[in-house]
Image (cartoon, rainbow, N blue to C red):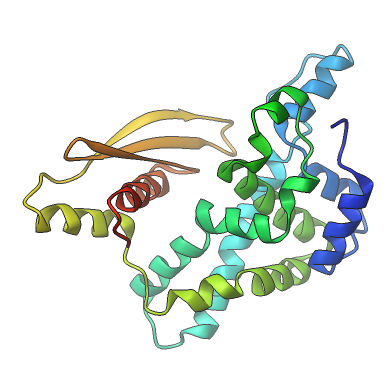
Length: 240
């Protein structure tokens, strides 16, 4: 795809209920770095990693989502304290939840990815979809402030927040309790990689218990460990 399909951009604006004043922000939010790199090198330019892609918008969108979700949780659960609110928040801003929102918005159809990445199905991977949703929130914020981003969050996260019921347990705590209950050694965490630009680092971590492993990826080490623990719990058929 040489760029995001105009019909898809219009469909997405209708889905989120916001017509962009600066349409370039929406196009940028849906541009995977492979497409940005492909266009830059096709023009004979030296491509800076991530330049022209949605990575900068993802950076600010992550903060926008965190703030709006914290605001909503404080309103919805006035009697809960930081621990319970924190565990709810972590689940609602997780890559898994973000990917589910992306599918509800049919983000895959609107993404601009390079041809070689298209062939391996990258537009449907959870991390790419989650990044695009964060970038979309960043684009909304830059286009017209918090209001349109808040509308998107409260519309497309409703099912996830209602489904929580009781506060979810932190995945690392849940995995530790699962292991101890079975007389197993405590979980171990292994850093597989830490890369990306300084403004948007990406950590990949593996959690290990009894010869099994789960993997998580996030913008900081602690969140990556939680994601790895959650992945391993899923493999064990447990949950947090």
